[in-house]
Image (cartoon, rainbow, N blue to C red; front, side):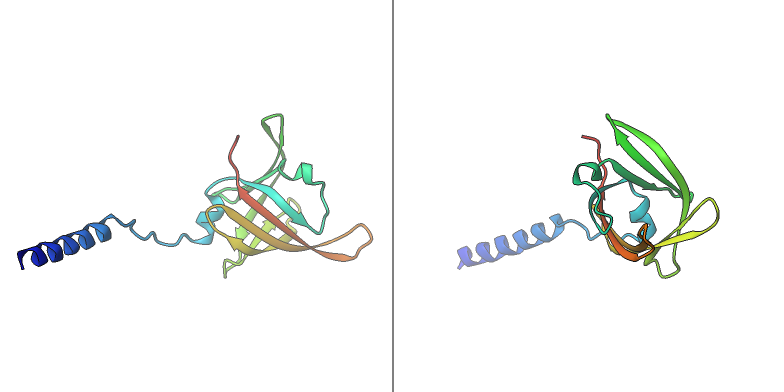
Length: 143
């Protein structure tokens, strides 16, 4: 009988220990926080048909102050090649890029988390036809 009590007590203590060791659930991050957490490196694209070997050279940074910086990585250096402004749509489902002439480009956020950003936008090709472009970015880290 004492052995059963010991076994029950052991199971109860193990259950308490296991639940206390679980990671606390984190609050979900809002879209702006995820976008500005780090730089994003282009890893996949459809629509523009960029050469695969050049994808990783394209890096974007959405800054907390509303700055949007495009970098081109070359020989371990990040060269700024364009700077604009950005904001989120009211529903936080679109990135609105504000160009120097105050015109705007909108990109729909298809997916976002700590490691991945996927956007979709429409662009006219040189012949004037509209095409849908989908770009997938990953959290940028120098290797």
